[in-house]
Image: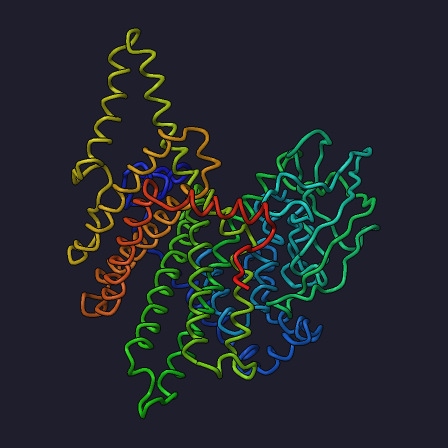
Length: 580
């Protein structure tokens, strides 16, 4: 029985253990939630269906009309995750992610507006709010009387959240906030802000989360930013000038705001992943229609292998992303607390899959896809931000990999400590060494049936499971190797950690797909999962190749040459080899 407070599938996997109990049963919405979702989808269809021209017009104008904002408030779209006792729908993570997916099918700006409110804007109140705080604000957040925004980013503090400059100084029973927040989604329409400020003027960190409302004196927002994509969503600066905030508005503990911010962002990533999956499903439908309708050389371009392959790969990528997003949301609903790595993987995987899908869908449309009359160019612009906000994919890759090597490092530290105590307590010392040696031997020799290998998986998936197990051994050995080689310096070896992260992303996607297809077979029979097995088989082959190539490049790569070129360009400030 796994401990839901400490268990993490990926952290175990990086140590060579496959904790399949975490994956099964593969999640799906409960019967009651399915009924609620059907009702929500009907509402969304009536509200958003057939408005493509309006969405395009609002994109060009760079703003959602106030009348439309009122429509989505009245439709209850700001109440999705608010508990029922406060007037909301009380959706769990799985159902919420599915709603954002449906929004993503229609328009990214709408999905971002709703998602920023529920995923991050008021998430801190849900996670860390007192009963008094919740009773005061959640009912009004549910109706949309208050729209929420998340205020962390500053001109000098993006991915480096601990370096915020906004200050909060205690003054009696209040805090006085001063500073400026940048690129705040919903900034222009929000009345409820989750704001992060330094509560100690010495050094980095020691930040605290505050609830700030627009009616407080000194709170102002800037004009709408002129963005590349998601142009109709509101993005502004938020300025705080001597804003007096009651101590009762502190979220969580004073000085523990970094933890609050990370918990909020972690919780919000299933929403972003869901929106990305919804966007992919829309693009696949459009691309399939385009490929069948567009005729070249006397036949539909869908009959050409190169085009058909694009459609097949888009579908495989979507299925993989959907499998991961649903699994992570299901883990949250089941009460697992250590899902940070899995949530980060879901964000990286889904946002990059959407970007590739948007690019390939436009390619299938050809020259027409480049024109603004068709939706592809807007979708491409809209999807680009996903790899940046809520944690850049580069930072998330670093986090994913460092978590893995941190656990391997703990094991090595335990061995080192045991070596010191061998003479004093040889039984204990040699016991730890023996456990570590067994794990190393199992990984190196490919011994099967080590702790956690597949027992719940349907037998027909044995070949795909074997690919997974082989790649898992490669990952665990690589993590062990790089830690021994670099030690604490691994933090600065970002090209190495990127390769570890990419392997972990592929392996978690494959694990999610294995669990999903296996559950499908168990519930509905092998015949019902025939195409899904093809999707799984294709992804397993691709993942095995990528993991093998990526981890092999830890030792044999061109990194030094590339970095040398970069150093030269940085020194020169330009490209120097123009031949004229």
